[in-house]
Image (cartoon, rainbow, N blue to C red; front, side, top):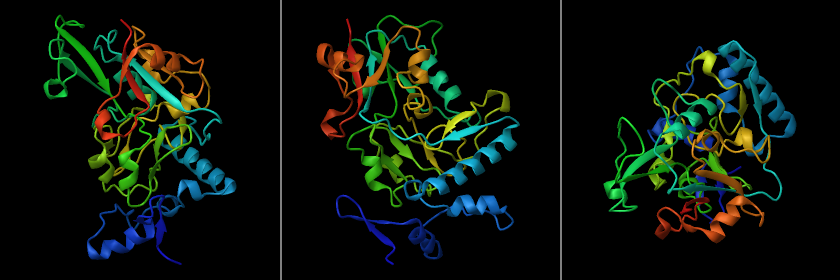
Length: 308
């Protein structure tokens, strides 16, 4: 059987087996488990791609993960694999006229999605911009620390994964470890990721993050309600990113992602783009809306707008 699989554009990509073979030639840099690693560690490393698992295989994988995570964190941890909801394509709206730059969205996301505290990993960045210059990212300030926000003469722009319809990150992955789901969420199979970081280089929004060291999440701060493709604990040497809180939005239809719930001024909106009566559709059709780096034709499902 060939080691190559055709993708939608008839471009061939490396399978995980091919990447493993490349180690001997210095092509890959996979973090192989230690020779004395447990059987479950090796089983995890060699398990099939998420999209190739049968229902029975998937249930065994989820049960193994729940057992391992529960043991590691000293509390019951659930790992679900809830599929996309039929007739739903998620979209996000952010009102730049309301955002005050408080960064509560950042830390709401960190808490919900089990991001590492040390070293610190954040999926959302909030940049400070000058009102006179407008949305000119050449003058964006990533590090600001005033006594109070908002500041006179400035406005703020949170940036995270734009959940692109034509996501450049998914096209460059040599092992197809990242893809776009039917509900529009771009996901990562952490067990399949080989840590090459091609997707990070391809993303024009700087929305992907690499685990250089073992993630540190205090046991008392762990969110035990996780999703296989979302906020479950990530291993060293993989890429992670925003998934619109997949563990929330698929499990409890109609619920906002954590960042939207944390916003104190209601600047963040979320909903189903396919529902003509949804709030997100109303915003797109009735407000001054723009998308980030529109000229790249990545077709984001993250919309910035001005309500006032």
